[in-house]
Each structure stands twice: as structure tokens, then as C-alpha cells.
Amino acid sequence: MEQNSALARLEQVTEKIAAAERQAERDPGSVTLVAVSKTFDADAIRPVLQDGHRVFGENRVQEAQGKWPELKSAFDGIELHLIGPLQSNKAKEAVALFDVIETIDREKIAAAVAAEMKRQNRSVKLLVQINTGLETQKAGVAPEEAEAFVASCRKRHGLTISGLMCIPPFDQNPGPHFALLEKLGRRLELPELSMGMSGDYETAIAFGATSVRVGSAIFGSRD
Ligand SMILES: *Cc1c(COP(=O)(O)O)cnc(C)c1O
Image 1 (tube, rainbow, N blue to C red):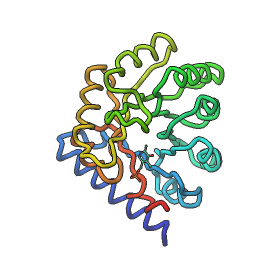
Image 2: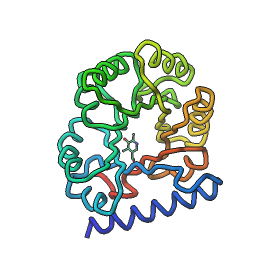
Image 3: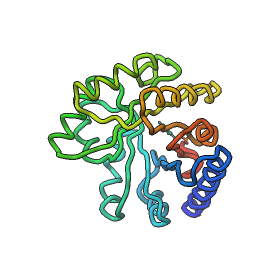
Image 4: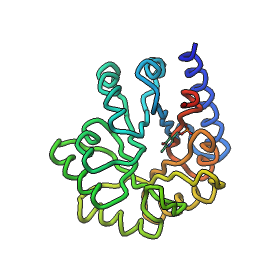
């Protein structure tokens, strides 16, 4: 069955992460696996929850609202990550549902998320997305603007930024992008690095990823 194969693939990914941690002389368990469940419905996700996995990623607020409130009430300890672009008119819903927002990338979003966290008296972990490839169509702060933006998040909006996230350009070797994110994180003293997807998570771990976002290698291809 499709569901059983998701569990088999989850186990394989978990083993490969452990091997990559050893290879990079990283502590066992130092890399968090964010299972990216976008496009898959609650029935496809439930077996993975029943197996004990708790950290998931979704890229659309509205899609996540259709499945995660139910799953969150059925399973304790879920940590849901928003890994797609956030519009400020969705900040309210995003702050209410997500535990981590990885895609803070402009003043307007920082302000909207800060206001909602205050209003809802809810704390959400925040990462800043960096556009390491300077792609015009891609979200994220340019690397050279990262320091000023993170400072503004803190000073203007009172936000704690926990780390950085990137999505390297499709058609490029991801290594230099991961290296750039790691260097920025070290310089800005931001310990968490979300980088690496199904095709390159082992590489990302070698470059210091503290979390990897893996979708199709667990849930199967999306079409
Ligand atoms: C879809 C998505 C992923 C997972 O991609 P896979 O190649 O299926 O592992 C990771 N990060 C982001 C931001 C995504 O949108």
C-alpha cells in the first residue's frame, strides 16, 4: 500500500540522515527531519504520525488549514513548519496554526507576524529566508541585506530570529548555496539552518544543516 511505502521511505531517509551526521562528525540526532506533506491529504499523513514522526512542513497556509487542525487535535506534539511564502493578509492564520515560520523575508511580513503573535499571545519560531541565488522570481532576502533585515526584525519588530533558510536555484550545484547560508548564519550568530530537500539533504547536512525539508523522498512524487 501507498501508506506503507511512505513509512518505508521515511525509515530510509532517517537512516541516510543518521549516516550523513556520522560522515560529517555531527552529533546523532542533531539534524531535524521536516517531512514536507504539501499536496498530500490527512489520510496520507496519518500513518506517518502514527509511526511517531512529529515535524512536518507545508508551503501554503490555506492548504494546511484544511488538514492540520484535525491532525493537531488527534496527535500531541506536532511541530508544523511554514516553508512557503507568506502573504501579510494570511499572518493571522499562519501564526495560529504554524509552530515555525521559515519564510520571513520582508518588513511587512515581520510587522504582521509580530502583531499577530502579540494579539494571539502565541510564540512562533521564526527563520529568515535568504535568496542565495539572487533569483528575481524567488522569495527571500538578498545575502548582503540579511544582517540589516535581521537587525530590523529584532529592533523594530521585537522578533527573535532563530535561524536562516534557503532554497538553492533548481539548476545549480547546491553546495555553494549551503556554504553561503552556513557562513551567514555563523556571522549573524543564528544557529539554525534549514536547507536541503529530497535531492540534496545529505549534501546540506555536510554543510551544516540543522534541519532538512524532505517531501517526495518520503511521500512519493507530487503530480
Ligand atoms: C516542496 C518543498 C520541499 C520538499 O521538496 P522535495 O524535493 O519534495 O523534497 C522543501 N522545501 C520547500 C520550500 C518546498 O516548497
